[in-house]
Length: 524
Ligand SMILES: Cc1cc2nc3c(=O)[nH]c(=O)nc-3n(C[C@H](O)[C@H](O)[C@H](O)COP(=O)(O)OP(=O)(O)OC[C@H]3O[C@@H](n4cnc5c(N)ncnc54)[C@H](O)[C@@H]3O)c2cc1C
Image 1 (spheres, helix red, strand yellow):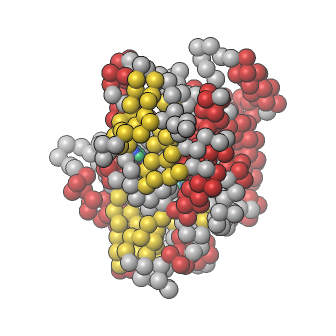
Image 2 (cartoon, rainbow, N blue to C red):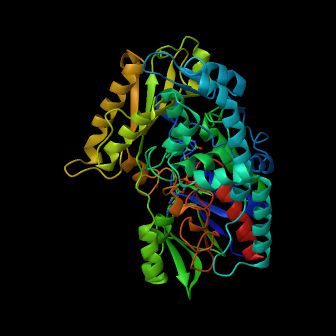
Image 3 (tube, rainbow, N blue to C red):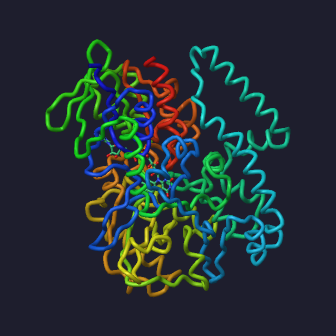
C-alpha cells in the first residue's frame, strides 16, 4: 500500500489542504499536537458553562470556493453575518456603526463629518475594484522568479491584462498606495478621527506596525481583497470558530483523510535530500510519501528539520523571517451585558467592537511596543459572541473576546511574560472602563493569553498571529522567503500550507487551498 502524505497540524489551512488531497484520492494523515483541531480557530471552555473563541473571533471570511467544495453547511456550519459589522466606540460617547449597507454607514458618518459621509461610498467602490483585482493574485500561486514556466508566464500575462482593465486612475492608485502608510491613505479620503482610526486599523490588525508604518496601506488593500467593506469581516458561526474547524475536519475525513489529535511531530525525517517520514514526540516514526507542514515557517525549518538537511544560506534566510508578534488575547466570562458609552441599541454590538478612535491613538498604542512595553492604552478589537449564539454561556450571561494590541512578544529588559499577564490585564481593564464604565464588576472569570502562550500553547512562533509579519518584504513572491513562495521547500517532498505562505493569515483557507493545488501537481 502506498504510504500516505502526512499533514503536520490541523489548523484550518492544514484541514483545507488535507481535504483537497483526500478528494484527489491520496488519503492524507493529519497529525495535530493539541487535543483539538483548529489551531488559532477554536472555541474552548474558559470557565464552567462559558465557551469563547479562544483566539480568532471573526472569520476571514473563508474563500467561497472552500466553503462550497468542503460543503461546510452540510457538515453543520451555520454562518452568522452580523449587521453592523463593526461599531467604533468614541471618547465623546458618539459611536459609529459600520453597517453592511454602505449608504446607511455614510449617513451614520454624517454625524461626525459630512465631507467623509459624501466620500464613503466612493471609497467602498474603489476598495471593491482594487480588492477584486488583488483577490485574483491571492488565488494564484506566485510566479517562480528563477525560471517561470510557460503556464506562469501565461498567468502573468493575464494579470497584466486585468491590471490594464483597472484603468489608469485605479492602476496608479494601486501602485502608489501599496507602499504608503495606512494613516496617509485614509487621510486622503477622510478627515474625522473616528472614521480614520476605524478604517486604518485594518492595515495594522495583527501586525507589528503602527498606522504610520510604511506598507500598512498594502495590508489594508490585501484585506480589501478578502473582504472590501471598510469595517472588515465580523462573520462568525454558531458555536464559534471551533465549530467551523470541526466541520472542516469532518469534511476532510468524509473525503478520506485520517486525523489524529494529541500527536505532536518532533522531526521531519530526510534521506538523500528527500523526506522519508516524521518522528513523533513519543518516539514513533511514520513513513510518508509527502509532508505538508501547517506549522509556521520558522517552526518547520528551525525546529522540525535537522539543520544538516538545509543549506546554511537558506537557514539564515529563515532566521531573518520576521515573526515576533504584538498581540495578546483576553477572554472574559461576564455576569451580564456590558454597557458601552453611547451605544443605545444592543443590536449594534453583534459585530466587532473597535477601540482605537484615532490615528494618533493607534500609533501611540504601537509606540509602546517598539520599546518592549505593553501599551497603557491598547487598541482593542472585541466581540460578544453570546449575542449571536446565547448557548455559549448560561442564560443572561456573556463572553467577551478581546484582541489586544500592542503587547510585544519581546519585552524590555527586566520584564517577562511569565509575570506580565497582570499588567496586561490591568491595562486592558482600565482602557475598557473608559468606554464601558463598570465592566470589571461584571467579570466572573478571565483567561489571559500572552504572546508567550500563543507560542507555547498554540504553536505560533514569536506569538505572531499570522505566522509572520505581513510586510512588503514578506508578501507574494517573498512569502515566506524569496524564491520559495510556491509551497515547495528545498527538501524534496516537504511542502508548506499555513498562514506563513501566500496569501497569508486570516481564516480564509487560501494558503491551504493554493498549496494543495501545487502539491497535487507536483505529486502527479
Ligand atoms: C489571537 C488571534 C486573533 C486572531 N483574530 C483573527 C480574526 O479575528 N479573524 C481572522 O480571520 N483571523 C484571525 N487570526 C488569524 C488566523 O486565526 C490565523 O491566520 C489562521 O487561523 C492560521 O491558520 P493556519 O491553519 O495557517 O495555522 P494555525 O491555525 O496556527 O494551525 C497550525 C496548527 O499546526 C499545529 N502544529 C504546529 N506544530 C506542530 C507539530 N510539531 N506537530 C503537530 N501539530 C503541530 C498547531 O497546533 C496548530 O493546530 C487571529 C489569530 C490569533 C492568534
